[in-house]
Length: 347
Figure 1: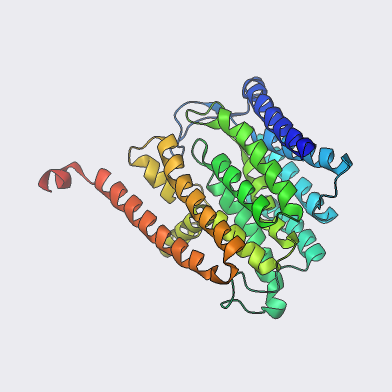
Figure 2 (figure 1 turned 120 degrees about the horizontal axis):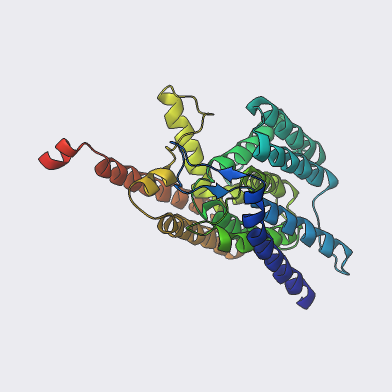
């Protein structure tokens, strides 16, 4: 185990120092995120720091592969799909690829994983609420992968948010799939993301960029299909819980915009975490508050999955309640802080 921890620490240090170097290098290459009306930052900041997370993950996987351990890894098509979405995002960070092309390549990567794993046969809910989806498992799995990839990208909008979520999710996945591929990949994701997070913390010196957020979304979406000791549906449910505030915010906002007749694929600033920040709170306060809730929810789930697997459905009920409270509080504070001056004076 000493060698394992040595690799994990090494990946953390590699990601940290590579992120610091990229913060200067990307400026010289002109890869700068200039603030606009939809931005949550006010200072031009280099983007593409997710290269450090991807690099840390790759170096860690290569190291563990050649070390004298019997760690499990996902199949070859997982890594091929990862390369496809990573290279696509790298190019997109430089020249903004058409949305249709990005979607097509993400779908290709998802189909490769679906071909290798067979997808999730059971609906992603714990007993006794799950059921066999039959042939619908294929389109549902495909939708799940593409949705998580894009939602994770959408939720990377303030300093430290996506990286903090990756640290929490990586640790939780390593515990959940402690005898399978999730242990290694989750540990490496958490380590590399923590190294990046230090430089990305508010006020951020560098942004993750699509190469980081899309790569993380792909890993989190596909990795549960390779979990050992549980069916893929329960694996996906586990990831839903550890990514709860990301996924529920993304789904909730998409539904609200669709009902309002707005284009859901266009960039905007109406996610709950953005409303939270727009209400006058620092990025760090938003991250600590929301990710604190994510850490608590994930911890409860880990306790239940270890000691009370038959009660996992209780976590879903708790998660729904937590999101209802979170969304109500955020939208109430946002409405109060952004109401017209005349109305505020009357009240």
